[in-house]
Image (cartoon, rainbow, N blue to C red; front, side, top):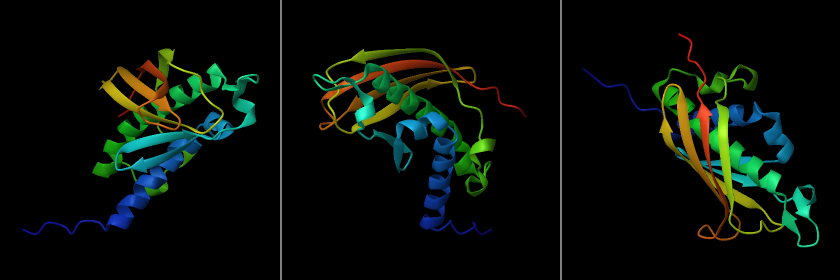
Length: 169
């Protein structure tokens, strides 16, 4: 009995990139803030490009706390949704090349989200990575960290709890 030949690496990469693009494009607020995501395997890094509109205190200048919190929450939600979608894409349950932002699975809903502001967000690009601590059928917990120039010098971190969408079928 012969095993089927593995898919070419480029096909797998295109399928994963298409799924991530559909997931991100399905949330207009992400486009409004200009947040992008870079994928390395199953790990995502969010980027919040600097804009003068994100300044909260022009005398310092410093990133607005609301923009920082939104960036962290969006990163947590995308990481959580991506971790759910990843399994379906890899098993072939979902055809990522046919994903449409309007037909994506429902996003988890935020139960609570606690942000720790560790230092001033400077007027430059910010980066974030999230880690799913627990994900069950009904509830998930995610930790997210944000930095600017140095990954070891976080300027904010957060923990969120999310209500998972019901799976039909």
